Amino acid sequence: MKITVITGTEIKGCTYHIKEAFLDVLREGNDITEFYLPKDLPHFCCGCKTCFFKSEELCPHAEYVMPIWHSILGADLLVLTSPVYALRTTAQMKSLLDHLCVHWMVHRPDERMFSKKAVVLTNAIGVFNGGAHRDLATSLTWLGISDIRKLGIGLMEGVNWAQLSQKRRQAIIRKTQRLAEKYKNNYTARKGIKVGTLFAITRMMHQGIARKEDPLSADNQHWLDKGWIKI
Image (cartoon, rainbow, N blue to C red; front, side, top):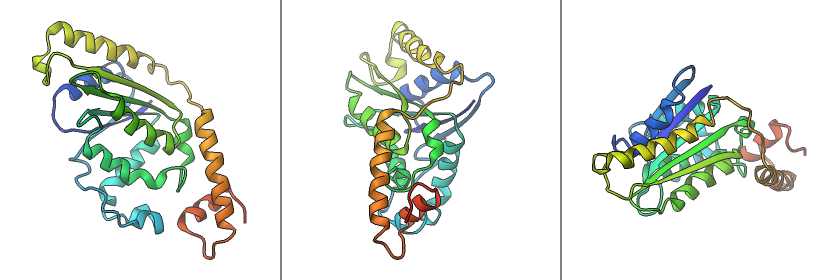
């Protein structure tokens, strides 16, 4: 199984240890590729819209974004890990999601995303992981992934891993590794009802707009080339 892991911080703190606990279950026999933000994507989306109007390969940050995107496309399992900042995911993780928005179903989706599995791992000082989960899961859904599991860890005892008691650290590791066990058998994910409905709605939208366009936009040309719409 090919696994792509994207971590929304370079700090080797709680997020790092939780991510490592998850991967420890899956290291044997699997191909794991990791990215750390912002090191592997040091630029925020600048809103130039080049990806939408022309091509994502012409993005001013393509040298960073495209290796991550190609790794995602080649993976069976995608793991997004992030600490919770201001009740949300980190800014550097959001920057990646902004860059990948061109591949949302409403723009230029890739059918390979429909068969992928994804895991969202977050941690907060308290129990408020929901906002970060929604940030990440929303993008994953619109990218076409139906099989998404989320695990939010409430640290409770401190901010740093070293501040947590041994008992608390072990409880976090056990909980994380129980989730990882579910992926030891590389089962095939299926397109769910929600993703299927979103795809059907956006296909009707592109079909209606494409009939009126001359020349076709990059988005509608993509849908036409895929055979998803006809004009």
